[in-house]
Image (cartoon, rainbow, N blue to C red; front, top):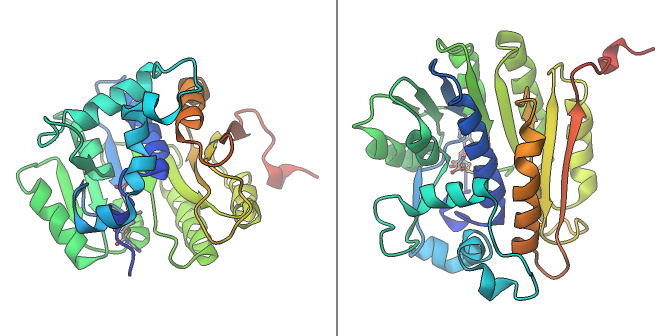
Length: 299
Ligand code: SAM
C-alpha cells in the first residue's frame, strides 16, 4: 500500500480516465431516476497541485495543464479548439472552489462524481488506505449522498451490488502495485459483479507499459458476458517499455450504445495535446458488440 495518487493527480492518464467518467455520468443524467456511482478505489478525493507530492513529479503539467494552455504545448497544431465534452469537463475542474485564480486543486474521481450528481443520486466510495479514507470522510462529511467505506473495494462490491438505485456505474481504478496479478483480482471481482448486477456499467482503468501485459485482460473481457465492451486507449509514447507509463486505457462494460461517438473527438484532441516524444496514438473500438455470438458459445 505504497501508492499515493497525489503524485499523479491530473496526469495524462487522469485526463483520459476522468473525461470518460464525465461522459458516463452525463449519460446517466439523461434519465431523472436516481443512479449509483460505486468507486472501488477512490483515493483521497481532492489533490493540491502545489503540494510536495504533486510538485515532486509535476505530472499534471503534461496532463491537464496541456489542455488549459494548448498553444504553449503544440504550436504545430492548427486546431486548438477543445471538443465540447473536454471543454465542459475542464470547466467543472476549474469551477471547483479553490480554483478561482487558476488550477490549484485537482478533483479525484469521488469529487468529480459528487459534483456531477443530482440530489437523488448516491456515491459509494471504497478506499483501503486509512489516511486516504479519512480524507474522503472529511471531504464529504456534510454530503448525505456520499457514503465512504474504509475497506477493500473488490470485497465491498459483493455487499454493494446490486445497488438499490438499480442503475449506475462501477469505477475500478486500482494502483496496479501487484502488477499483472491485479488483472486477476479485477477479473474475479467483475465475474461475480456481473452475476449480481448484469445490467450495471463497469469502467476499468488500466495502465499501458508493454502492450503484451494488457492483452490477456483484453481477451478476458471479450468473454466476460457483458452485452457491450468499449475500449478507449491513449498512448502518449510507444507501448514498448515495461519501465514507464506509456499510456492507459478505459474498458467500459455495458457502455452506452453511442459512447464511441461521444469519445471519438475528445480522444483525437487528447492525442494531439498530450503526445510526448512521438505523435500519440489512440484506439476506440468495441471489444464486444450487441449481437456478437458469445465466445463461449462458438464451436
Ligand atoms: N480513483 C481515484 C481517482 O480517480 O481520483 C484514484 C485512485 S488511486 C489510482 C488507487 C487507490 O486505491 C489508492 O488510493 C489506494 O490507496 C487504493 N487501494 C489500493 N488497494 C485497494 C483496495 N483493495 N481496495 C480499496 N482501495 C484500494
